[in-house]
Amino acid sequence: MLLIIIFGFLLRVSTIFWGAGILPYTGRYHPDEKKTFQHAVEFPSNYGSDTGFTHGSTVPYLLATLLLPVKSIVTPAHWEIVCLMGMRAISVLAGTAALLLVYWLALDLYDRNTALLAAAITAVSFTHCMNSAFATQDIIVGFFLLTCFLALFRAVRSGRDRDFLILGVLTGLLLGTKITAALFLFAIVVLAVIDIVRARGAAAKTTRRWIIRLAICGEIAFVVFAVTSPHIVLNFSGFLAFWKQEKFLWYDRGMVPWNQVPGIWWRITAMTVTVPVLIAFFVGVLLPGRRNRFHHLAILGFIVLYYWFLRHHVLPRYIATLAPLMCIYAAHACMALVKRPSLLLRMTGLGFAAIILVVSGWACGQGIHARFADPRTEASKWLNAHIQPGSTVALAGDSPPIILGWEYPWVDESKLKMVSPLEQPDVIIMSSLSYGIMEQALRSPYLKNWSWDPNHNNNWYNYDPPSPETFMLFDELIRGSDKYHLEANFPLPDTRFQVDFMTGIRVYRRTSF
Image (cartoon, rainbow, N blue to C red; front, side, top):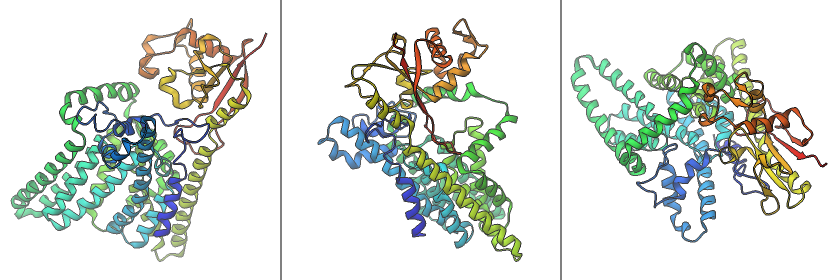
């Protein structure tokens, strides 16, 4: 088990400096990290008045409290880096600790061999590994989710108030990390209802006992949540208004019929955990050989509810939160076959376990390699070597650079002058993401006379389509013109696995007359 933990840690920590803007010629390549570590940057002055509702404040506040003595002896810029790397370190540790939690949870549900295999599969779980080095909440939520399930099962078995108090503390931390994790409360309710139904003649007594337990758990959870997320409690109307807007922008506008949703679930989940793990997960759910069957009902019910809640708005990093639970059932599928008397079935189980570990490990290796060979870093080095100091440089995208800044390479503004792409600069930099979006838009029937049909503005970020001048500029660059030519191209590394927040870079130079 120790070797699995060490190996899992090395995979997760290997890219901790990627896209942090610390190493030479690198920028910050993750668009959502600042929404998390900014809670820590502004602490303690923002305590109770924080306006960041996107990501939970519990872990950043705890980090800032621990590191507060450092804040007074470093510059604001260095304090921001400390918070960024502190959150990344916590995420790496949470992703690594999840391996031990998976082992304990699988041991509760199955046996030691299954638990070891589940931990090994989680160690090389693709998106779980790739997201562990980020200063975001998805891996940390997965860590707290595992601790909450373990605490819940222990509390139900013991029936002691002390264990429900511990469950309340962990649930409060979970909710303060990501509010949508409130779906975990469903698992508590499921086990309570099952216990009451099984009591039969003593149902009334059992119900009263559960009311007391839930009161203890709920009160402690609320206190922990309120202390670590006071701005939500004090400004709950603002919190609701914010998420109503987010729902409108990101959920409602992409709504698809329910008959298309299972296909989306399969595609994104397969991308997250790889196809062999996903197949083994479904097999593991169906195969017998479990202990504590009601615990399985709570876990599987939570997974179903999680997918139902997300509906079509499923992103790989959201599913990374569930990846450890899926790895447990994938491990059970393999070990259940290994335990069969038939030699063919035993070999099938061992073979499938080997396939899972090899494919997942290969995916992690490909993802780590892709980050070390990031096109933005290579483009930044090229700009420094080939573009004359004093040249004008512009960043061309389908949205303002302030929104899509993560797509672009780092530019040394002490040597190069940044201007608007509409000012005919010496060099224009374009990401492969913007290239793909605008190339498709230029062929769309919704674009007429360089203006986008306002009835279809939901195709664009914040419902704000590019200007006619921007469409004309991209048309010149993509289709070719006498003004600019493609000087350098830095494509995405060749990998079969999609790595989050990666993009290629195209550099256009103005043609001299």
